[in-house]
Amino acid sequence: MMSYHLQSLARCVLLVLLVSHCQEARQGQDLKCGACRAMVDEMEWAISQVDPKKMIQTGSFRINPDGSQSIREVPFARSEGNLLELMDEVCERLKDYGERVDPTTSRKTYERVTSRNGKSMDLSEAKLDSRVTSSLKYACETIVEQHEDEVIEFFAHETDNVKDKLCSKRTDLCDHALQIPHDEL
Image 1 (cartoon, rainbow, N blue to C red):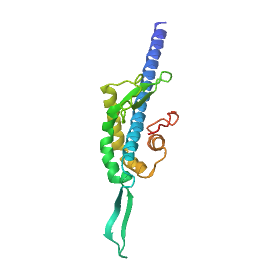
Image 2 (image 1 turned 180 degrees about the vertical axis):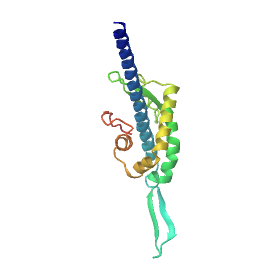
Image 3 (image 1 turned 45 degrees about the vertical axis):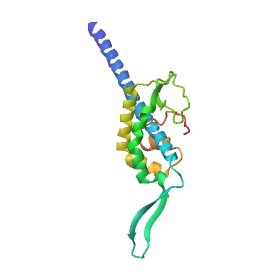
Image 4 (image 1 turned 60 degrees about the vertical axis):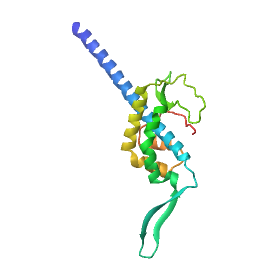
């Protein structure tokens, strides 16, 4: 009879550990997804701040055998050089983000808590602390490092729904089933 109780206790402990592990994995997924989505928001905002008329020449400045050059003009905002520069700075801006926990699903989301234009923001449900911002910044730096080529590719060519295309479909950082509203800039 004693071994039956020990087996039941062992099963309960195993179940608790399994549930705890699943919650930690989901929280890690929430953090990675939140960092990716915040990084996309910050990149889109930074790109929008560049004069759309500003152009840059790209391509080869060598003269081809036929006497032509392979030079083309592209918008500076979406040029590889500008995107690389923006990527170097983007994760620093995540210090302006806080964490919200959905009361029904316990899923964590991350959103800007410091206004860019001076307007007041609703911070009533946002958790603001250095642990959250440092975790978010680290997750962002990891994403930028591991997915640099994809980030540049998407921002150089895509303009529609980059969050879902990059964070969910391309990099799998966000759960495809997770319904997160599409925010506006």
